[in-house]
Every structure is written in C-alpha cells, then in structure tokens.
Length: 338
Ligand code: PHE
Image (cartoon, rainbow, N blue to C red; front, top):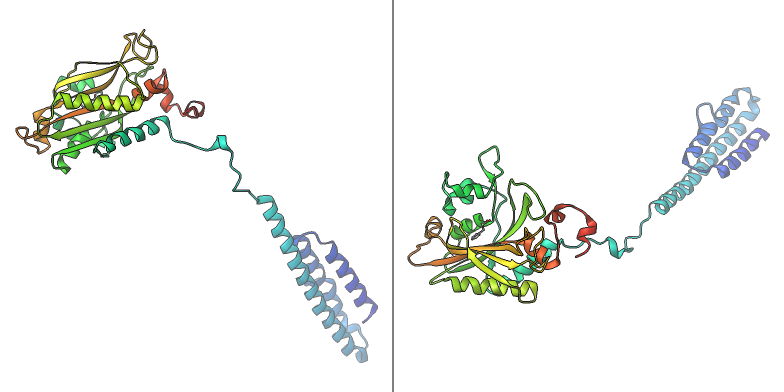
C-alpha cells in the first residue's frame, strides 16, 4: 500500500475514534468517502499512476474503500447504541415511586353518597340514575307542577335553548323510575342538580341531592319517619335532634320539612343555619295521587313516600363545614381533609 493510502487509513482510524456522535460520524464519512472525499479523490488519481502500477494501485484503493466502509459501519453501531443508552438514562422514570400525599381520593360528597347508597341498599332499595338535562315535563308537569303554578318560582331554572332544562331536583328520577318499575318498589337516586340562584354560605347553583321513593300498599307517614331516622342515625353515627314541620311541595301530600339541629353551631345560630339553629335537610312527604297517576300507578291501590335529601348540607353537618362554596372550589387543601 502506498504511503498516501496508509496515511489516509491512519487519519480515518483516528477520526473515527474521536467521533462523539452520529452527526460527527457522518461528517467523517463525507470527508473520506463522499464525492469530494479523500479516498474518492485519491482513486481518481489512478490516471497519474504509471501503467504498470495501476493494477496494484486499483486493488489497494478498493481494499481501502472496503476497510473504510466497514470501520465507519462498526463505529456507527457503537455510537447508535451509546445514544440510545443516553436517551434511556435521561428519560427514565421510576413508576414504582409513590408519594402518599399526592394520591387522589374520593371527594367528601362522593364518600357520603356511597355511604348512603350502602345504607339504603341494605334496606332493600335499588339505586337509580337519570340525566342532568331533563324535559320540562319530567322536572315539573309529571310532578304535579303545571306551567303556571307558583311553585315553579321555588326552583329558579336554567333553561337550555332547545326548551329543556338542567334538572332543578332529583325528583325527575322518581318520574322515570315509576315508568320503569312495577310497584312495590324502593328506590334512591343520587344526583347533581342546578338552580339559578344567588350564592352564599348555604346556597350554591350546583349541588347534590339524594331522592328516595317507596311505593307499596298502605305506606304511611310512620314508614317515612322511620326510614329517615335510620338514615340519619347511620350517617351521623349518633342520634341527632330533628324536627318535622309542614312543608309544601306540589308532588307530596302531606308534605314535610325535616330539619336537624345545626351541628355547626350546636343550635345557637350561625350563617349556615341562618341564625335559626335548625337546618333544612330532608324535604319529604307522601306521594301525591296525581304523581302516581302520571307514573302509571293506581293511587287507589298504592301509596308511597318520597324525600329529597340535600347531600351538601348533610356533609356540611357531618364534618362541620361552614360554607357550601368549598365543595366546588377545587381547593385541594379543602378536599385533602377528608
Ligand atoms: N324535590 C324537592 C326539592 O328539591 C324535594 C322533595 C323531594 C320534597 C321529595 C318532597 C319529596 O326541593
């Protein structure tokens, strides 16, 4: 091999050793094997070689080309593997690391809703669900609240542009339930409800209720009160002071408001109980015959009770939360306490 060829080979080996990455390697490939690369230019000089030496020069040049190609290829593999390793190292994450305080958990409303579902299913109730957007019929008319009835003012409504509404209470699920089920039945229906109203410590435009409905023969107020007592005892894990007073809802007759003694202030009066010492928690009553009729149930044969538990207020009483706005605040400092 001529001095020139040997020289080039030494240069190439040294350059390859120093190549740090694939880009540098490609520059080396171009410098030696590219169109204007050292080896290419040298092979073109064959015309200047004495004719008797051309054959051996040609052979040497071809050997050098093969050698250069295989050295470059070998280095390419090495550098590629090195780059993959570096990438794996820099992008590596340990999926087994768990930081206790960063785990999510159920919202207090969900926790108590689950608890209430357990309590009622253990008493033979089934759990129903319904859509948050409802028809005017299911939200009002089927519940004995005709179009011009003043009771519609009790529930300021968010209307949708197509004439439907965001349900103002979970009582619409009663309507859906009656159509699906044959009496006797016992259902609860937890859900989110919406009202267009001024917001303060005890009022939100979006909150949760748990509807309940029992239809059977000879259902009376006594059945209603005993179920409500069981519910409150199980949720609060102690006896709480309650009072029952007449309440008006067009879909029940008689209708009641079941209040509990405010557990935030102990009954002395605060912003949550509007200084009254009592919190309205469980509006309820015996199902109005018109409602049974609209649901396809004969009121002469069957009667029933219904209630609409205010879930947010119940959770507030259970945990001593003094402002309903915390629930939707998205503040993790609040949620993490439960
Ligand atoms: N739907 C009523 C409300 O939201 C509550 C209620 C339910 C009252 C069932 C009586 C019976 O205000």
